[in-house]
Image 1 (cartoon, rainbow, N blue to C red):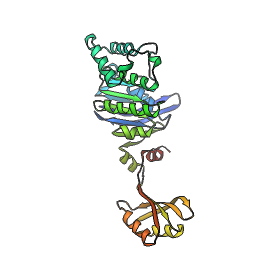
Image 2: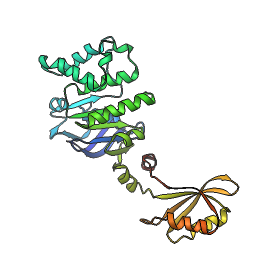
Image 3: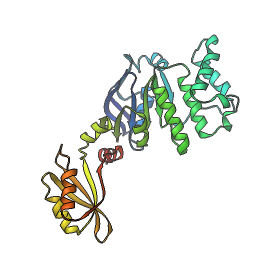
Image 4: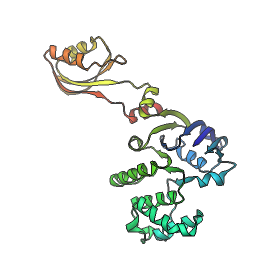
Length: 309
């Protein structure tokens, strides 16, 4: 559905995007991750034809975004980081205006307004001035304008910035609902949003592609390792020696201390080996106590730090 090939953007001597390539499949919700200043918004603006690239190409459903920009824009709904709302207008007036400039037939506009108001949870505020709305409702209005013309692709640039936790959950669920029917690129630096919303993630850093795939695939590319965490009550030196002597233990690290004889240990097992049973048997054999015991899950935050450090 979307093909990005060798995309480069320079402004003066600054290289904002440096030869990045990736694709987005039809019906996929793609998380576009990166630290602030990584080039996420620049990429969004080039995909939506607001900016032109210095080099490389963007193809939307086989159309070139540079030479067929009007045709590609018809396929895209765009919610920029700063939502462009006319605050003096009422919600109904604004969305009707969007429908008209998007070229919807007059006999379809009323039904389409009703549909997006229902889908975006705006029915109770349609007659209110936009300036009176909360940040959460403004984001809903922004989403409504982005889907008004029923685009095949939805580009969302930092859609939850500035929202409180309840509003974030509401917008996240709305995006997931919309994503069942459309191809979505969801740009953010909030990693929890990607885990909760997206099928796949791309990480860029300093204008370059740093990683691509599911969280598990990204973890493998980042060289992340599975670890077992155990909090054990027993003499530190003896416990550490016993854990290191386990047949399939590659590395043992003391990570924290609760008291004089209670320490936390991270044990790296040999690839593909589950150490938990032999580890617990070794500890109990010595008469020590296991106070906490779990596999340490590799989080997207860990992968993100590893790929962007």
